[in-house]
Amino acid sequence: VQLQASGGGLVQPGGSLELSCVASGSSVALNAMRWFRQAPGKQREMVASITRGHSAYYADSAKGRFTISRDNAKNTVYLQMNSLKPEDTARYYCNADPRPYDGTDYWGQGTQVTVSS
View 1 (tube, rainbow, N blue to C red):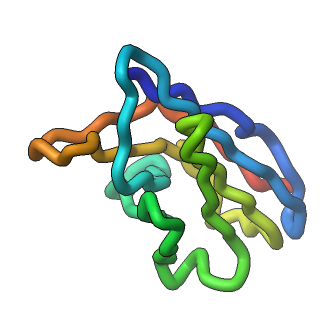
View 2 (tube, rainbow, N blue to C red):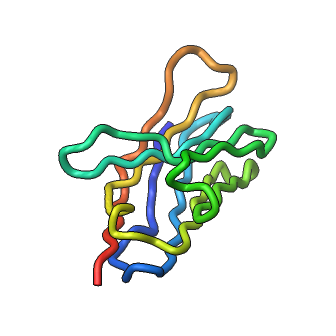
């Protein structure tokens, strides 16, 4: 299974971006899907996660500004980011657990988000 993230770019503070991540491969079946981010010199952190049943969890930094969603039929997870701040600048990675869960997970290659005026 491969995860392909897209939608990153340069945006001004206060702007919005929507990231997408599509899983492809034979017999794709996924449980939880997540977005992580990693800024230069910082540890990777989870931004948001969503279960197959669409229950969502957000890091405090994302609450009220970001919305995670998924389309199970398309094996795709989205991250709508509003009111972006310079501190949101990072490389954003999608992550997913296989179904049934076997202790492994999948990672995408990431997409760069830069918030700057």
